Length: 437
Image (cartoon, rainbow, N blue to C red; front, side, top):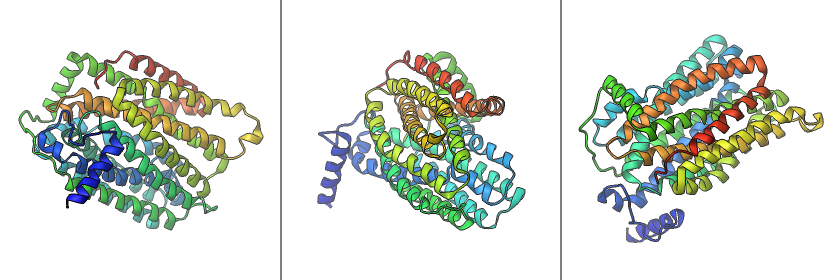
């Protein structure tokens, strides 16, 4: 066993840039000894999760699913808000429960298993669902999937904080995004081989693979060597709410971070509208879906390691730069409407902007995730993450409704200009956040 352990340590040192794989900060000594193994378990677990997220994407795959089963068009507009807010809103209410668990990885495992079951149900609906009833069942399953995602999200960050040292967490998330992007690229490439509207069987296969990805995520989480932590201070939901409100009042850095994060929602809200502009050119063909999945995979594969290294150096600057580049991408997407018609007759110009925005959104996500984990201490990390995610879930619903109304009234291109202004405001706020690395 010695040789594989040495090889694993050397690979870990190469991926992280460490000269000593036992150099640790902010984690127990027992976790330090297991850090190279934990790093790779987190990496492959994230691979399963990210691949599943892409193949069950509310931005791309699920709209095609509703179209195939003949669901009403208005249901498509509910997909992204349910997917995002359903994963974020309940987290404050489960933070106290997680705090009572000496090993939080089992909450992560439960979330992964539930997501796998939900994805399997979606695969079944792709084969037997039809009309409004089928669409309603898709939305109901998506609610369950999103709630399970919330469980995994908060537990994953807490386990990472206990098993991976500071200035290694952003690198880990960066490499996981890169590997997952490569696998997603292969899946999108297969879809590009088809020219017709996606059939029920093709979507069922995609969603079944997503179910396997979440099952793999849960299996890897169960194998992480997590040192049992303190369980004192656990609160019920309402105590967590009161504690959270005190944090927002007393912790200026945490409050400013949440304002910045809210403004950075512009990167997430812009993505489906850029994709929508492209779909209007290419219709519902499976090849167009494949193009967008391939672009998303390439973008994630290339962007995440760069952002990860930068987040370990200064996650504040990553959020600032994410705001600036989000604004640039939104303005570019809006400007395509004024390009010559011959240039915009296919999905490719919009796919390019979509890919650039995916790169930027990866940076925004990595920056805010690394910032909140490093800002919080070991004793209050779960509460900080849960409170921030719950606030963001509420704002996602509100902003989603406002953005949807503006898009209906002004059109997608004008909406992108508004989102660009929001992103610039986010960059200005991030510039004044304190450094936490």
